[in-house]
Image (cartoon, rainbow, N blue to C red; front, top):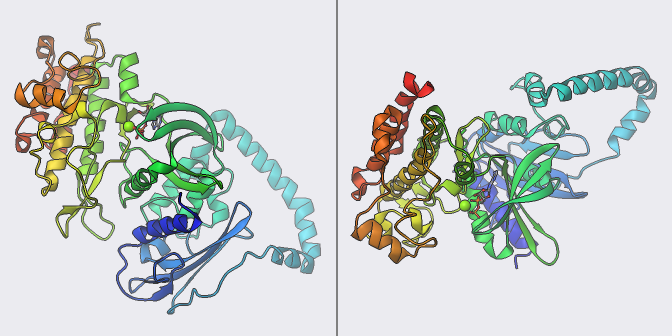
Length: 496
Ligand code: ADP
Ligand code: MG
């Protein structure tokens, strides 16, 4: 069972990952690094911070990149909640900071008469104004819009008090962070603070690694995936993937926080994300049909998410190509606006361009058997080429499109929901069951004839066939699928 020291190591690994692009420059104390030292880039800084977590002072000392320094939350303190400090000489963050709750009191005594005036006149006025404003915002359901309209000037420092102020909603917190430069998520201590103030409400899903809950944070719903202690590696891996720089996208599940809390007898491992009340695409399609336009919009959003995941972005703030490896309707969530996000990145792999390898050792067959590409089923996949993993995702995407298109209702006609190969394999198929059907007999889900009579369904049928070719190099790319679907969205007859 992992003790506090191992947890700190993991915390350190995440911090080190976030600062991985630093190569040379200033030397700083790094409390959580193996040799307690880190190096910044030429324009970086040493970071020294203390924050109140669960009534205890938690200290973090490490290196900051120039972009993180611009990231507003790092270098500025807020009274009694945290003290943060950036400095610019070797090991200047050696000093240990403490939160000083006495100072404001002393200041108060020194300037008592002025303060008294402020307290007596200004505070009730402000409270009244805030009360009225909050009332209006709550009634109109515009809390997020309100705080966004009142956002600070991006040049001004944003301190923790601002960050954790009660009128900040999650969307604003995440928006602040993604525009502040670090690009890889909220600071770890903020993640922890959020996670530890969530109240769990009900279970909403069960998967490989435990349960998914709906929780409440400051009046907003969040999803909490709870891993058992023995699945710590999976928790760590999924948190790490979600915090890949530049991963954030409207069609990838919005990550909020990871937290590992040792409660004495076991470690609770939480992964907090945005909550989507419609649940998975699997649940949605079981319950509802979609219109032609609904189908195209949904398919386009899934392809957009996958294209973003697969894409490598070059540059210091770049993003590696990522393959999902477990794409299926249960791992796609439906948003309220009828688009979707790709979720469950626990099995994803990143491409390391410098060595042309993937970032973790992989065995041949991971994922869900029903959705496995033929080359995975018969183990002919070339694992030395990262493209292979992307092509296997495209095969699975074709199957998800098939599930979706069957539920498209045209003039009241549609098929019942079914999983791919429902008519060819048993309900919990073995690899062997799948291999016989997909590789030996080369069968694929059947495309109903009536799809030919409607342009959007005809295009969807053609797209899925081009996604599940046996020859993986002949398959479409996610970007190609996305472009074809974008063209469909402007067609007039899908709006009928
Ligand atoms: P696992 O790795 O265990 O498969 P998933 O992340 O796929 O876990 O989640 C399992 C199920 O929980 C999903 O199929 C979905 O029904 C539900 N779920 C997961 N995340 C969310 C979320 N953010 N909002 C709503 N439902 C979710
Ligand atoms: Mg899943």
